[in-house]
Figure 1 (cartoon, rainbow, N blue to C red):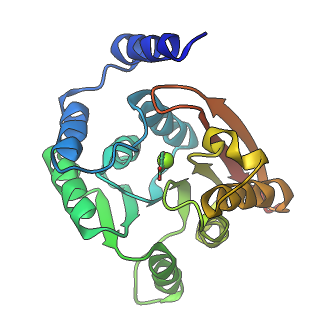
Figure 2 (figure 1 turned 90 degrees about the vertical axis):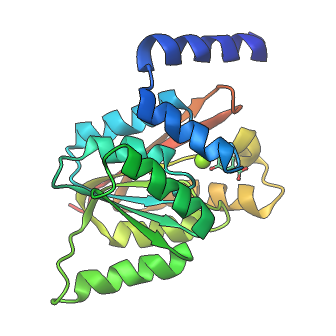
Length: 227
Ligand code: DHB
Ligand code: MG
């Protein structure tokens, strides 16, 4: 089918099955109004993340790459009211938009937005886990959707923060097909991440290819299995 068919099918899926509510629509509108790049997950993918996290029974979720908080909203909806989402965003202006979006959706108290370089914040989270004075828990669901160059590092660092049986989802796992012939640092990063998923002794993983208005891409899904 043509790209036009794919877009029409996506519209149908979103309007018929997913039906984003007013808070989700406001999240998208707010991000656009603030001029954020339109690279957030599509509503059908956001709902997929929410359902995956619910399937996993996730109580504590880590997200790397908040952007305007659209995926964060989906993840926050998956945890119980006493659960939490820690989300890392490098750009303080984006983080501010996300904060507004999550507060407007009455989920501000569920989400802990950490502003900074993700590599540094992941180190900080590791330190918090090993500090007996800080009440901090391992994660049972991780969504990685930040700069692609650092995907292998994010996977490695996230794994150290994961409980046994945790699920890790990587966005942009196909990157318009560039993973099989990487020509730039971003594509090399994603490919390196996939190679890690395929070779790591403590991960069982797969990749699902996707199409949609944002092009040809995919989700990688991995389960932490240390037994
Ligand atoms: C880009 C990043 C993403 O995470 C995405 O889903 C789509 C595009 C980008 O940096 O171009
Ligand atoms: Mg993405």
